[in-house]
Amino acid sequence: MDEKRCRAGFTLVELLIVIAIIAVLASVAIRPLLRAKSAAKESAAIQVIRSLQKAETAYFLRHKRYGNLDDLAGFGGSPVSEGQREAASEYVFKSVADQKGYTIIATPPQANMRTYTLSESGVIEGE
Image 1 (cartoon, rainbow, N blue to C red):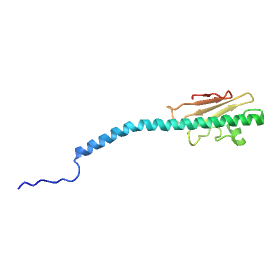
Image 2 (image 1 turned 135 degrees about the vertical axis):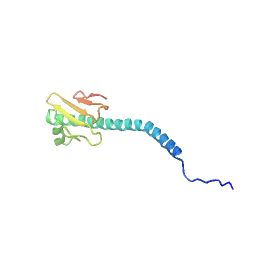
Image 3 (image 1 turned 180 degrees about the horizontal axis):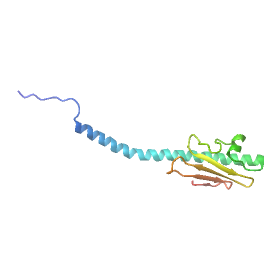
């Protein structure tokens, strides 16, 4: 009497093939996701720089000199203090200021991201 076996489940080879396909798809998808994450952090850093630019202008109009990030934070115009890591972008912001001008540098959290510099000219370098 010939009995056909009815097997439930998958063979080891079938499972390994499925795992390999998932691994290939994941490796293809991860790079664009990481690039998108870096781009979002860079965009957030640019928004902070633009906010700092407006704060410097307001501070200058009131005090007749430019302020560093701590001055701007005390004035209520800066979302970050000197050397502080900003939450959304994870960039660290530092500044140098005097009566004639200012320079704000945004240092990225990762080496593959851009560093941004803003001066009193209003030009954001690195953009």
